[in-house]
Image (cartoon, rainbow, N blue to C red; front, top):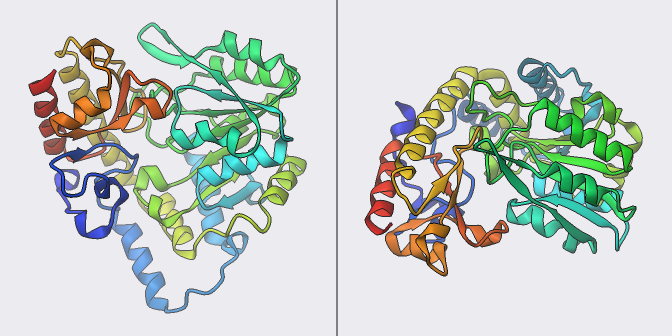
Length: 377
């Protein structure tokens, strides 16, 4: 299978591999996969570069890329949007920081679902705002947001914005329609805006789970900000291209005004890759999901054999949130690195007793990681 191929990334200055350069540690941290892009994406990029001119391209003028997003959301989520709702951004991290700037004043409070990935946790402070953590709870073998705590904290008039991940990074849950409806009720009744980072929405592994975009919820009347991208699914994160869907014109105007003169346009190659991904790669996408399901199931089975570790199998993403508190060590991250495996440190996400392992890799690399982990746990 194409996903079994091991590609040497060491000459490419890959951030993932540079971290442990010169050390015998298998990188399994940052959320990009070890899989070659689908050929239609590479063909589209070649065709675009062969044109020979890489001048300014206004994203809103790229009709085909915008239509590709419209059609993709219609097919995948039965969500009918207008191209006017699309705001292109060079990544979801700039986008939720723009949302902080657009919707809050210094000193306001921002609700942040935790654990969460480091740039999202850092966003409130970077924008002179106060972060309020909304933890996650285990219910029937699945992680979800502590909705009672969300309701309690949202009642504070100083809270203006709730930023969440769905699917949830690092814990991998997909919020149900009932959970989303309650989140909408809480936000609407307390005048709290919602910004939903949905960058992993196209990587649903549980066939009984269904992703529902925040912006599709009728109660928000189009005011929710939904952040998406082709980057995680199709491994094109290095092209710096994502998009926000903002139906409400007033909210969209605030967002665009906050980004003005600070956030650059997305690149023409990013637009080209997104268009190809959403129009020519359905077969690749389905094969990718099948491969990840196999990796997820293998990892869950093997981790369950290690009494000191606990993993609730993720419903989505290619990321596994592993509770290593049973090891009884002060620094689980160092423990794993000493074994030869380099996960993301749980402390960066809000829980020092955990690590996050990226299983978006050839099965042979995952098997190697398991062997190393078993040897020391």
